[in-house]
Image (cartoon, rainbow, N blue to C red; front, side, top):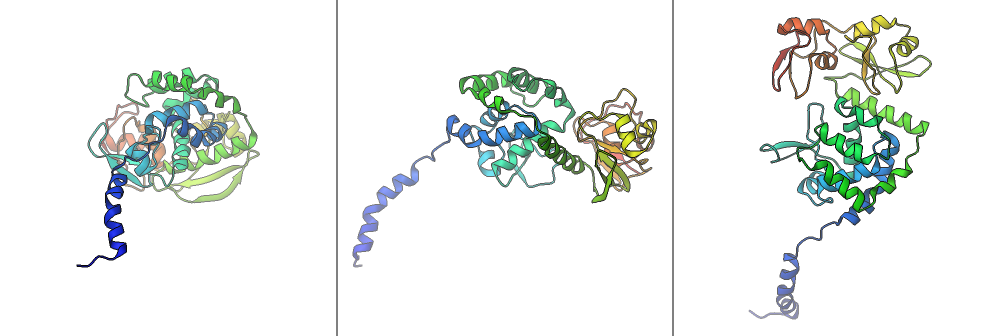
Length: 320
């Protein structure tokens, strides 16, 4: 076979191309990771009051500076698993257990935003938001004690990265602003709706001097709690007595109302739309009652349980 000049050139170049093909992909350094994501960490800090230093330190650790398989394949920079409320795309890989389900995002920025919602909409992390925005040590230890990660050295690793790379310098850019509070509430309202089973569309009603949006779930109207809300403030906005709001939500006088929390302003139903509910880790009967807009006493009756009964993961509960 007679070779032309182009064929000879390719034959000579082949060994060089093979060498380049075998070169390992360049990995992102910690310094590069910080430069890439510091702006969104600051933005999320101003929206959700999570120190930018903590967000960056967690991203560095959980994603291996953005080099982990989960970060590359699923844009998941914080190791957040699917959990009960996730309805987006998923990515499966072995972790603590075989073939675990992780959240998959369209880009890293979506991962950062979901990380903020993940921390701000879970009761176990609520105490962290009482800390000063510059208290990264308190945040690091708090995340560990709240069970964010199983690594016993998790807090120390976060603190070491923050101090080594002076990530605390970004926390000084925190600035409370009314427009940030409004954006935060909208995000939390969305997150609250997403935790409900088969939630319905926005009712299209604005209620009270606080301009509360009214939603509907299982045919029952609800609003989302705002920062500083009390039963009285909600009663003033809705013209519903305080005792009745507590009754609608199976709550007591001493209970606190959190930002983004679902608060029903009508009596919940005697039964849910779904036939059953599979218990997720950490769920209580009250959580499930709120999730499905079903009266707590009815839920207890259907399953022959007391309202304070301890539930276990994967337990099957009747909703009708």
